[in-house]
Image (tube, rainbow over all chains, first blue to last red; front, side, top):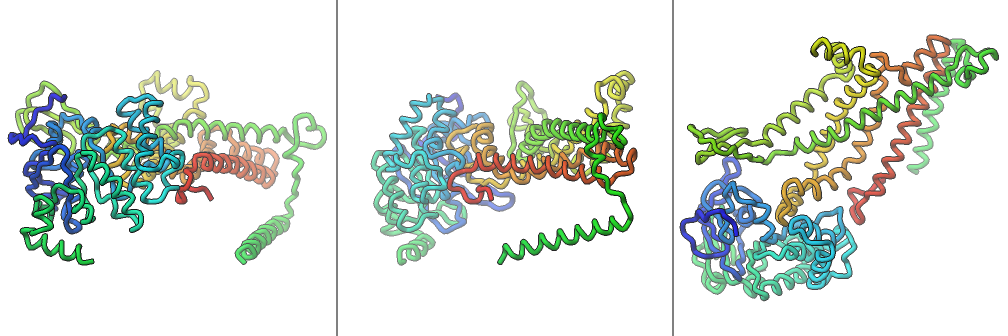
Length: 256
Length: 308
């Protein structure tokens, strides 16, 4: 579908392939030698202490942040290649942010319609119908004409998920989707995400919700100081994490 | 309580003003407000000149200079403000050129046999230079440069056209000068407005597949312009007030006319009072209009952007 050649050399056939990715902010190295592969339908939860590079790891996948070393391919398209049409690539990857990031000046339904019309070129009717469908799916169809600031955090985050899904993405990235929410709102968002995972969506989720990871994840990636320290199935991770660092992290996060 | 204190402050100010007027009385100044109402018809009735129409004419020149300058300043300033936020590279690859050496700067680089040019670096730099120059040179100096120096830099015919043959040379010089100067101020407001929007908004807009132009058009600018309405109002008012400098190159706007009335009639206090009231009146209308605009585009539920 795109002429851009696959420059990874090692074509593992995964939807997302990262090979020896390194990224620097000036002198500071945020990602070091990160390699992983995510297959279609996989749900991968990424955890680790703050500043370990989790958010950066998923931001380089859709090219929101540039990287300096290694290769990333998404669905066969090289992300780091200058000739890649990044806007087109990003439209195939839904992304949900910690602070929702709905566009404050347009209503809920306009938020969901915007990229459908401007990027996918859908007609107004079609975009509206698709938006209403998704709003119903996340249980917010009665809020369609409100503005983002009039909704609660949990509602805003569900709209953000609907906005991502409206582009009919083939994968979804979640950057700490529940970290900015009050405890009672976390579940309404996690429920939507669980449903999405059960429908077979390919997902990478940066999260500290270990309950969600246990229930939904196929794999868990544990990061520390820019390195991928553990990358294993969830049973292995919660059963017997290999590294001391991961054990320490788990003991801290699971005891309270 | 707060209200009482406010009333007290207003009361004191009025008292001080009245005191000053009282001082003016000590100069044995002959107040004669009727000169302002004089028209050419009632010259015989003891009036010296048609000052009423002079003031009206001055006012219309002031409005003309300021509005025309704003028509230049707003779009131009917006463009420069947007360019000043281009910190991410926009690479244009120059095709069919084999680069013999490998080099990399922020502006131009080569890699794998292709040369790329970072257009954003040049646009950004150009906007920076523009704003630095036009914002940091005093407006009066700029006005003299445009009026006296600029025509000399042109070819003989072009210079002569700008000086003489162009219709209303003083007016257009003032408009261009004031417009370019105000554009640099508008640019700073627009830049500040865009930069005040969280980086996450930009990420979110890019992540749903909008192109960089669409990110600005549909996400950043609509919010940025709402945020900067109050400071932009100040700049718009500034254009009206700064237009008074045009008198130095011979535009007969409100201040110039007022001075002329003083010279003819020696009734400067009345004339300048009238000018003051008119300046305040015009700017008040602008303020009210901008308030209305602000209220119209207010985003429901958003406290930080709400008027009042």
